[in-house]
Image (cartoon, rainbow, N blue to C red):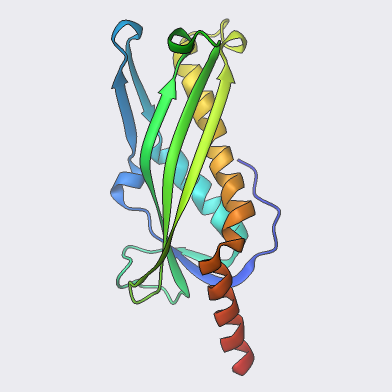
Length: 180
């Protein structure tokens, strides 16, 4: 996953990844198409760490939203609300597709919720490119999932800095630093 090329905001952010986010697994039995498992947890956390590290002056992983150990200006807590996928056999389209619906909560260091930000992500891979590989179905879903994570990272890099809560936070931090 490439690091976004953005100018970091002068904000120190705590990142909170709960156990569900770190260990997220989606399993689904599609009757005639078989059972599928998408292990998202170990992949998505480094993606979010990388994109937020590019967006903010300093990040630190924190254990709690209510009492962060770090001195931070805000706490960001991403979560997965839903994951859906389709395979070529279902849609007769020749593509594997993955949709992930994230929610990113932004908290004041006191634990007060400042805002919630929806984050849709979509990924697609072509089954024809995977036909020569063993486990084409698994590889197809894996590739579509990686593209969905890239989509999530791009959305965060482009749109998160202009979210009203983040713009207000950056202005408040800059004003506090200017006043000494």
